[in-house]
Amino acid sequence: MAEFDPDHDESISDFDDRDDIIWFLERNDVPLPDGLTVEKIKSRGSWWAIDEESFSFRVERHPSGPFPATSPDERGMPTPARWHVRKRYTYRTTGDWDVTEQMREFHFDPGLLVDAEFERLPRKEIWDEAIARAEDADDPEDVLNEQLAATEDMYRSAFSTVPEEHLDEMLAVLEDEFRRRADVTSSSP
Image 1 (cartoon, helix red, strand yellow):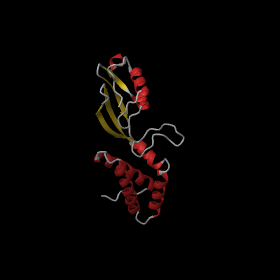
Image 2 (cartoon, helix red, strand yellow):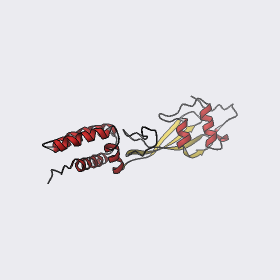
Image 3 (tube, helix red, strand yellow):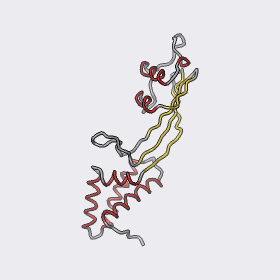
Image 4 (cartoon, helix red, strand yellow):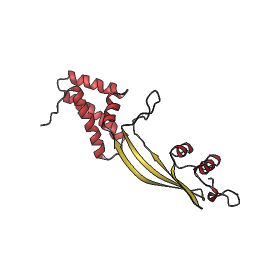
């Protein structure tokens, strides 16, 4: 583990800014906390602080479960459901890292969710097939329930740490869109 050598001329107190820290991390064998890379620090690091014994910075991430952040042609696309996670990373002259999660919130956009499920491949094909089956079925509710059960299983697995009320809201959006597209009215009174 890289740590500061007291006989060496360089010390944290000699660092002036983020560039000095990045230079240090790139040129020394400093093990980084899980999931953190120098590239992520460069692109997402903010709120830098440097003192005699440590330096720290904040990194925000947006994990998005099963939804890719890019399209097949590699253009960035907004994801319909994602976490917003902010962590503070502090590196001490002992070579140790302290990682503190400062915030974790889950957000989803109903319109983007419908688009991701019903308009983008490969999910579009699955929904199109289920809608066609519902339109031809004697009891479209059976097809709806079958499709929603499979979707619910996938979502509960992919979003295992998402609060239950968010999962329920997402599944309700998908059910409403399925009903609208398949012209299936609700069977509840």
